Amino acid sequence: MMITSRFCIFPPPYISTFRTRCFAGETSDTGLLFREKLIYLQDLNVDPHKALRVNPSLRSAPISTVHSVENLLSSTGLTRPAIGRILDMFPDLLTYDPESQISPVLDFLSNEILISEQELPKSISRCPRLLISSVDSQLRPALTFLKTLGFNGRDSITSRNTVLLVSNVERTLIPKIEFLEESLGFSRVEVAKMVVRSPALLTYSVENNLAPKVEFFMEEMCGDVGEVRRFPQYFSFSLERKIKPRHRLLKEHGILMPLSEMLKVSDGLFNNWLLELRLRSYERR
Image (cartoon, rainbow, N blue to C red; front, side):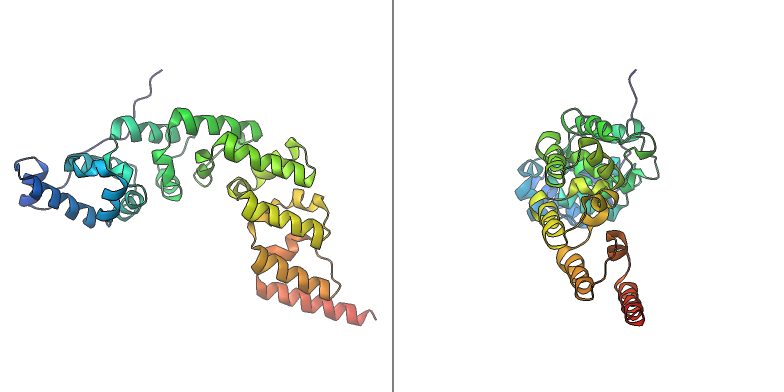
């Protein structure tokens, strides 16, 4: 059954009579039309020089094309500042065909991921790359793979983690899962449960995040891997600013503390706990 898009392109609210004539094509002065295009981009807080460098097709694209992209994005509930930020990040979008290149992504998010109207702008703002991703070759294959891990039912993909959909299954998602299996000795089922509990795991770099933290946990902390399985959020904390300093303090005072208690609390509460534990140890002497 064909699903009709609920997103539409509505007539642009022209700012002035002068611009109206330009947008409507009532002038053939290409220099003037180009200048109006630059002004329009600046109004959106899009860097014209960057946009033209990244997307040379923008130079010859009619202003109506650019305006139709803004209108479609606006119909999702995105604010104009948010739209400007997205278009500045991904200038290629400025010459996308709204109906054939952007609407399919919006329909996918609404009809297959079941993102609500209220959550759709949040999803796009958190991961604008969705808009330049192919539904057939990227988003849908990623969704199918994530479902095999357990991202369904109560744990279905939401606006908070649609960023996972832009990750390549073979080159990005599977290598991270295999690293966690091999480095921690976990089964695929155990790793799947971890990433469902903490989806951000699949967004971390193996080289810059996962590997250094596994190494520190295994070699310096001599930790029980069962703790990481129960508390996969361990990987979301800074190794240099939080994990190492807190472990060093606990080690200096001979105090053992579960990972979750060691990391989840604020610095103030952690220091209070540490002081209280030290006082208790003195009292037992």
